[in-house]
Length: 127
Image 1: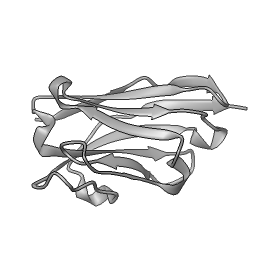
Image 2: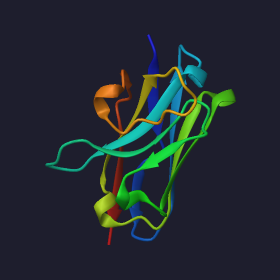
Image 3: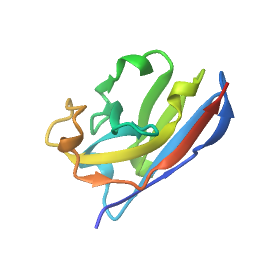
């Protein structure tokens, strides 16, 4: 059973930086494309960023461009989301997800593509 565990969330001020980590167990991540999603209070879960299994391809939601950076370290079985210049609208529960992937170039933005999900970590940004 693949397990994903997020960490690094917390309460920060607008303009601060934060790094979320997703650690994968019971499976090597080299065959998994991965992504970050978030769910703000009262809203549906939405796509944030994704990365192909070898890290060569990434996708971002428009609001994340230039401020959030997704990366991964397959040797550590981990994925990261570096969040810079955070804004109150970044407040949400952040989920990491993993998808079976055949190709190194595939980074997925659709939640239905992902088979494995973490429990989420809360990020709260105050102004």
